[in-house]
Image (cartoon, rainbow, N blue to C red; front, side, top):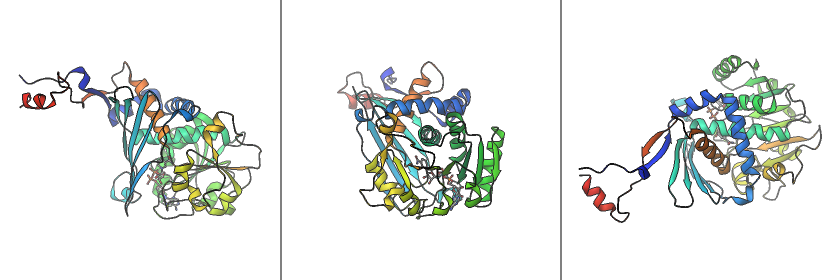
Length: 348
Ligand SMILES: NC(=O)c1ccc[n+]([C@@H]2O[C@H](COP(=O)([O-])OP(=O)(O)OC[C@H]3O[C@@H](n4cnc5c(N)ncnc54)[C@H](O)[C@@H]3O)[C@@H](O)[C@H]2O)c1
């Protein structure tokens, strides 16, 4: 008789369908607010993690990356790509999946889609940082780049920072139309703009979320007034930036993990020793967040492994006792741990 997998063979697997069910049952805003709490908790215990810049394999068309990290209990990694040309060919720019494992025996305890989850965790991180850095009473956010990440960013900023008024601009008006339609349906006050200059008018927060493999200049120096918080999402690879260098020189720059951000972030345009402020220290209260109403703050976001680890931890906790996952026969588990070959033969 063919052996059937033991309970040790199964790893909970969250498909895209189940991730969407979980997000919809929770509500995307509550999901991202709760996820931001997990991210904040993990940033506050930053020294406990193994950290390394992500392992990136670059090609002419894009990048494929592995993003690992671990604490004493769990190990997590995400596989993620970034291919700006994909969208024109009917593919996503970014797709991802990830694994959370037990450090004690190395067995995976969660396998999940992370394309949707990456959009959620990126937005949750941005809004969490916005909570510390956005000027007091911020009401209006400019959003330049209205692609896949855009609506998630808007919802997270509303859930965490209370921002409900948006000024949208994309080089492709169809993207702005799509985002406006989705966001008006979510109850936002939306202004569609014909240029980046128009979008930033009267905005206290500026989110740049474009995708281009080349050095781009989405924001020029004259577009950024005193007191603004910039949430720069799209500059996240060597050679892929969004801000003019002069903006960086006028800003206080907040980063996730400097060794990775210096390679991938906006600050790749600056000397290696240009001062940056690490967000985990701000969240622990060891360094100041926003000091005054005139300061320009910049979150030079590239996306760091600990944010994905927090997202994996959150999903792992959320699916317990639910049907938002399927057991996946992923781990070979012979009765005698040394008889892997015998198990294969008995299955013939
Ligand atoms: N920092 C992070 O943690 C993180 C996480 C995920 C994605 N990203 C990055 O965020 C960016 C956006 O991702 P996405 O999934 O939304 O991509 P997407 O391709 O779905 O959308 C990008 C949008 O930018 C627009 N655009 C391109 N050039 C522009 C310009 N010059 N001015 C205005 N709009 C322009 C495009 O028309 C498109 O609508 C990508 O660069 C991606 O790599 C960063």
